[in-house]
Length: 338
Ligand code: 13P
Image 1 (cartoon, protein in one colour):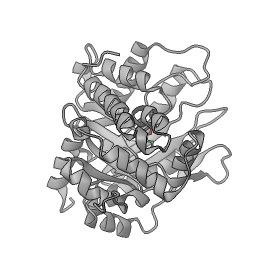
Image 2 (cartoon, rainbow, N blue to C red):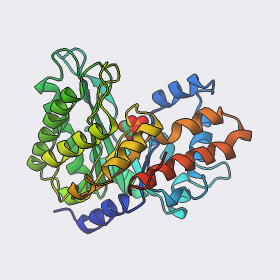
Image 3 (tube, rainbow, N blue to C red):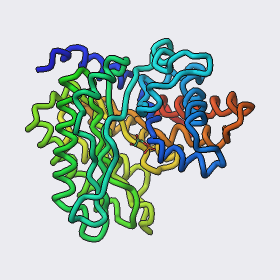
Image 4 (cartoon, rainbow, N blue to C red):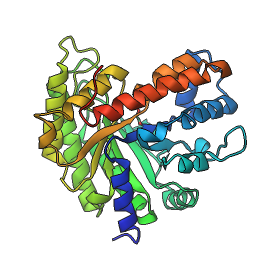
C-alpha cells in the first residue's frame, strides 16, 4: 500500500467530482506543431507557450474542469508575466496532471501496431513531477483495429506497460490515468470495436491486478465503443452509449472512482452527446463509477481554430474553449442540450 494512499484516493475523487472532468492539453511538441501548422501558426516554443497560457487563463475554467494534463515542456513554462503555469492552476483550483509516457512506437515484429514507451527512469521523473506540484499522470496506449490486428502481443505488451506505469505512479503519489485507446480509424463495425475494447480492458485489468495497482486510486480513460470512422454503417448515438456502458460494466471494477473518456477524433458535439446519453437514464443508474470527460480536441479545437496565433483573438478563443468545457460539464451530469 502506498504511503500516499489516502491522498491518491482524494485526488482521484476530486478529478471526477460532479460537474467536472479533465482537460487534456498534453500534446507532445510534434502533435502540437502539426495542429498549429494546419492553422498557419508558427511551430515554436513561444507559440506553444502562448497557446497554453490562453487555455490556462480562460475565465472560470475551473468551474468545469477539475484538472488539466500538461506536457513536460508546459509544466516548466510560465505566463508572460512570469507566473508559473502550475501556480496559475493552483489559484484556479485546477489539479496539475502530467503526461509521462514517451510516445507510441512501432511494436517489433508486428507491422501496423504500436507499443507505448517511457518506463525507463520513470520513478525519478514521477518524483520530480510530484515536487513540481503534479498530482496525477497519464499514459496512453494505442490499439489499432485492422486486418488481423490487434494481436495478443500488442494488447499484452501495452497492458503490461500501463500496469507497471500505474504501480509506479501510485508509489510516487500520482494518480494514474490509465488510457488504453482503441483507435476510431478504419472501416470496422461497432461490433468489432466492442470485441477489441472488451479484450483490451479485460487484459488491462488483469495486468493492473497482477502489478498490485489499487483500483480506488486510479482513473480509467477509455475510448468509446463506436463504429470505425470509415464504416459505411454508423451506429446511432444511443447504440454507442449503450455498447460503451455494457463493455465497461463487463470489465471495470466498481471500486474505480471514475471513467474519463478521450474524444479520439469525434467532433465536439458528438463527444458531448455520447457522454450525455451515458449520464442519462436508463444507462446512468447502471454505472457504479462517475462517467465524465478527459477530452483534448473536443474541447480545444474550436478555440485553436479561432485563435490562429493572434493576440487579438485570445478573448474570443477563450469563450469558445469555456463553452466546450461547460457543455461537457453539463453532459457529465446528463444536462447537455446541443
Ligand atoms: P482527444 O480527446 O483529442 O482524443 O485527446 C485525449 C487524449 O488525451 C489523448 O491521449
